[in-house]
Image (cartoon, rainbow, N blue to C red; front, side, top):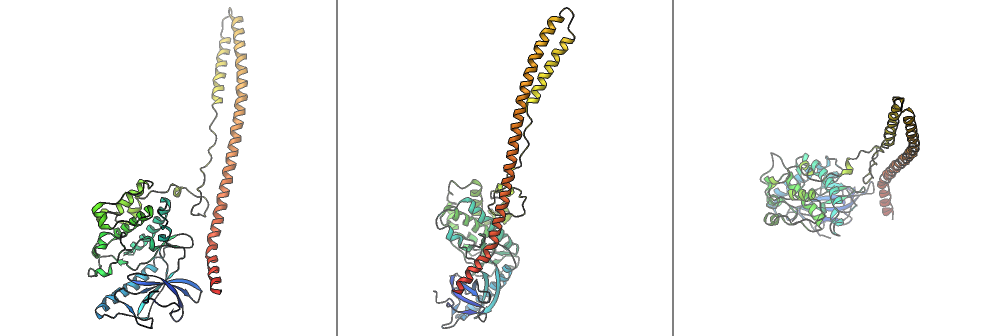
Length: 423
């Protein structure tokens, strides 16, 4: 364990939070797994700890700034840490980590988040490239998160698989806003380069070069495109300088042209050449046809099979038209008989009678066949409608069962955690 981190068993807020272990450390803070002792619930706690400027006093939990010249910088960053945590907590978005508490202690600041134990996207992609459908679902979730972030004039500035976790329902959740910054007309142009952290391969040139005034939503869009590249190839994305000099490497052949174009535009070196907001980027992504299907049932479950198209009535049979033609021909023959001359009356009558008799037999045969065929069509239509109705019922039952499973998962997780604590 890092000696700069709080020790296992340490407490915060007069015992309200019990530190269980360190989850990770970045340039702006240390994240811990902790227990909210009142509820027996696991939480994640982010401690403000500016790397290179802060230190932990020996034998204590207190954080101090040993170099006086760094005090102003640390103080300014700490204020941003708390104010941005409060801003993020107000977003109330399912795809953004839920911040539930902010407080000062030990000479520093902390914010408490809901603990997500569904694993990270980085862990899921370690086995290699992910299917495009999975990548698109994750991308849609993170686009929703970034749209909320940008609406508050905030930038995340560290979008990557390691900062995307999964909740108990399998939804992608964006975490770690340690590098995030405000972007508006009042932006602090005096921000030093040490305040603009970045992850290699996922950061655009303006971020790598620490040009604070050039950061915009297009900077996060670059990182999102790089994340998609990483997930679809199983490889680290090239650094922005490499993309500038050599272009983006070819994506696998199985990736759709639309997705290739979206990533290519998102990772363009010049900021102004990229989509300028999340809506513009999402327009480049392929639309899932199944998402357009209307669902009659009020309960919608991810992965649910869309309803079958309605059964159309059988097409009218052509036999009545054929029979009408034959009957018309018979009528013409009869008319000929009626208007024939007396001298030929016998011959014409005999001929006409023979023709009518033959036609009548054919009409009877065809009528019989038409009725049999029409009965088969009606029977098939009834069978198809019955199968469609059964299928619709099964889909509704499936949706209800899935909904029940989803509603029981949080309770089951709480019971599991309580059993672990009781042990």
